[in-house]
Amino acid sequence: MTGSDHTTRLDADALNELDALVAPADERMARLYPGDRGHRQPVHTVYVPADQFTVALPAEWGGAARDALDEFAPTAADLAKVIEATPEAVEEIWPLLLDKLDREPIEDLRIDLEDGYGSRPDDTEDRDAVAAGQALAELTVAGEGPPYSGIRFKAFEAASRRRGLRTLDLVIGALFDHGGIPEGWVVTLPKVTSVEQVSAMVQACNRLERGYGLTAGLLRFEIQVETAQSILDCDGTALVAKLVHASDGRCSGLHFGTYDYTAALGVSAAYQAMDHPAAEHAKQVMALAAAGTGVRVSDGSSNILPVGSAAAVHRAWALHARLVRRSLECGWYQGWDLHPAQLVTRYAATFAFFRQGLDDVGRRLSAYLAPASVDATTDDSGGALDEPATAQALANFVRRGVHCGAVAADEVEPLTGADLATLDTLAARRMG
Image (cartoon, rainbow, N blue to C red; front, side, top):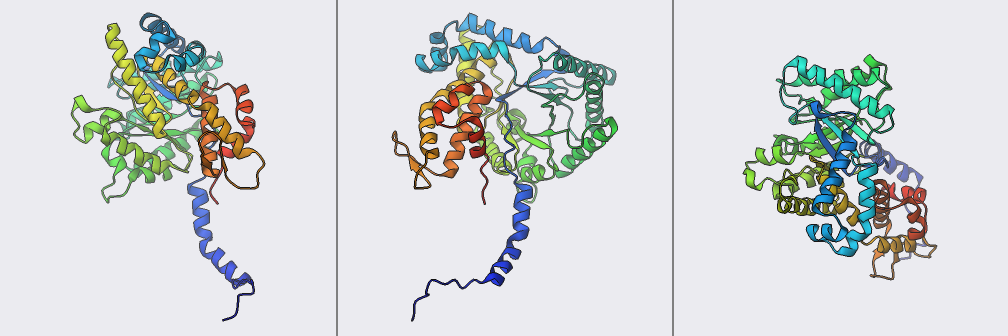
């Protein structure tokens, strides 16, 4: 047998034939999995019943969080004991925490007209919906609104569908009449159980945009995953993946409903929690369904509120900080907060997460981005072999830290040897 003489056997016709064979899959992959949009993801969503929402609410929540801190953990050392962190770690993030509570206590606000609001006479809900829309518009025009906002309206179940759609229409109308739809506006579609509900929501958005003369595609929504059916369809497939792809690109997030979901699976009230195995399984499925689509995943909430005696507040803070940290470690970078005092541990745990190991992340990115003759590099602190996928994760880590305020923008280049624009490009890496 003679050698191959290093010539190829796949000629142009063969390569063209193979390209044609795979081209439909290439198109489908690009369409269904466009990758992350690159915009900021809020670290939490605050839910407030519509009748309790006023222009002053964000500042009031920030003030209430500061008051709770002053009363129950007035120093960094005090808070470190409560959340079982090192004094040095909390000392580092302490000024960031105080600044956040003063400057931007709420990153994402959801005015609730569903479970947290309840069922009320139609004229009452109409009035509260319009008032909430007007108050949010006033807050936005004043430049004091949170970066993200929206409403949660009643589910697309037959009994509540028309009521929910009327509420959505009224709120959008109030915003339209008082300055327009705020940047970062997104609404929450709860208790989804079918692809048809998502398709109906897409059609509702189309009609509302045409009716109010809004830019096509402006209205976006989150799918709240809180039913067993939204995870597992009757044919055994993961319905949540179908929900994402039925949204015509309008779905921005999958939000987990801890208590509805675990109750639906028969978990008793004493054991319903964000870290229950049933809840974590659902969120892993959600993450798989959302991966590569540009849709973000949000964890749910803890209903153990930091209220009452010092001991009760400390127990609730310790639990909340642990749950927030666990969510971050699992790659779920957002959750729900239901009480102002939860802002303390939301930001303390989040900032500590992003500050911890930041120097190591910076060294690894610097080594990866430095000119070298190999495609992957090892850092000199732990022998990590970093390839493009790992570098993407490292860049995303730094960017998320900047977005929430845990990392200052002027820290990035000294840490990594690259500016934020370079990290944006690195984080946006796509397969293929």
